[in-house]
Amino acid sequence: MASIGHVVVGLAGARFSRYGQPTIWAPFSAAVVWSGLSLLPDIDVIGFKLGVHYEDPWGHRGATHSLVFALAVACAVFFVAKLARFRPLRTALIALAVVASHALLDTLTDGGLGCALLWPFSDERFFAPWTPLPVAPIGRAFLSAEGLRVALVELAVLSPVVAGLVWHLVAKRRA
Image (cartoon, rainbow, N blue to C red; front, side, top):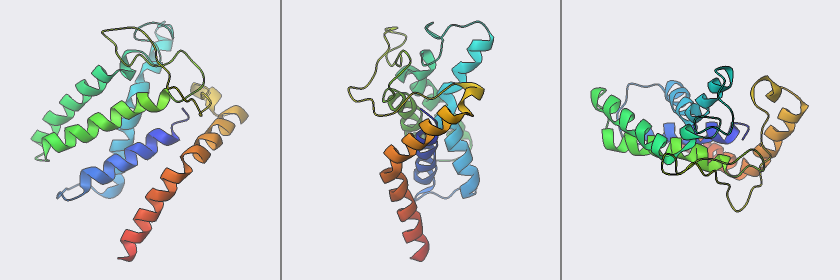
């Protein structure tokens, strides 16, 4: 996935995390933090530089794309939220949804080896039954004509979601 969908999920997470709860976070800061959280599973690309192969359990779309990883991140967020005096359970559940969505969105791509959703219980990699998104080039290769094509396809597929978010924000500012 070209990351557009992941960032959109992060923006939605930022919005939900602020809804109905006092916070010291500015909207932009919250958007950056939650979008970063939504991109966190792709930290596994560091492994390429360390000699970890794509198909290894800790390779790209391996352990960090599992539901167990999302749960572990949510547990960490719970404790940080508790220290920050946010609503910890609510914040952790939003974090769980944001991080887990990364792998689920990646299963919608048409390439790679799939996502190890059930790691550490299984190293099997999964794809969704429907794969409308082309797989994005990794690293600097993303800054190419192919990377632009993938980003545009992703934006087109996700345009109803993006339009809904924009509409919601514009309608809220008018109210």
